[in-house]
Amino acid sequence: MLLVGGDVGQFVEHWHEEKVKTTLCQSLAELKALPQNGNGPSFDLAIWFYPPDAESANDNPILQRLSTLVDHLILIPGAGADVAKRRPRLVLPLAALGFLPDYDCEVV
Image (cartoon, rainbow, N blue to C red):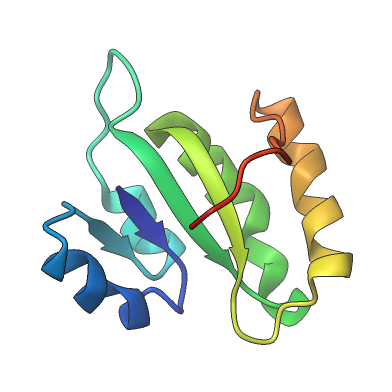
């Protein structure tokens, strides 16, 4: 599992206790530094804690990089992110990259 975003640190301890292998990337530079498997995605799942509007300049590069690294992507608003404004602007570029929303899915 790949965890991306500035808020990932608060979730690390829980997943290490559960023995879930995780990779953390808090910035675009760290995400770009990940090795890529030439045959397909390197991760089954990524969870991106997307930032508020004021920090959205890297959205498209992050989404493009994630699209080459993962099979499935979960979007979770980071601290201060306005879901009503941010999420629709993330869904459109994701759809263009082949990631379509699954609103029947629940994260538990």
